[in-house]
Image (cartoon, rainbow, N blue to C red; front, top):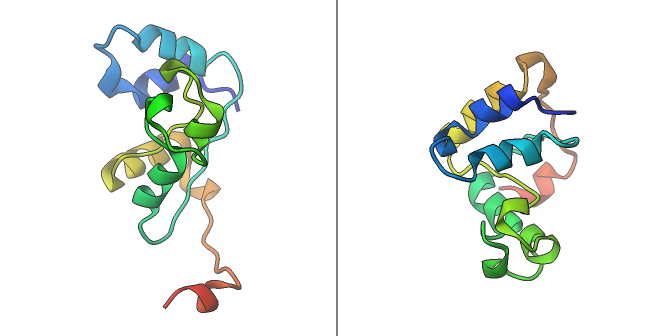
Length: 112
């Protein structure tokens, strides 16, 4: 999807007073984005580990930012930092009808 500048301004509202905010909104609205919702145990903690540190040079190899990012202003991915942020962002990007509940066949084998 293409995110509108209006949607991005709401999404990144907490950063509005920072000098890089206009460039962030312009960059994020310059091409397609793929919003996703993940769920599971420790999903925020584990998801942020997979993303890597915000500053690419501080990201571990094997993380998304560690492998694919060079500049903090182009860090490729966003991940919610808390359950509250996740709920806010999910409601901003998705309607309830766009979210689905399902059971994975492997769940009994990998979860207690």
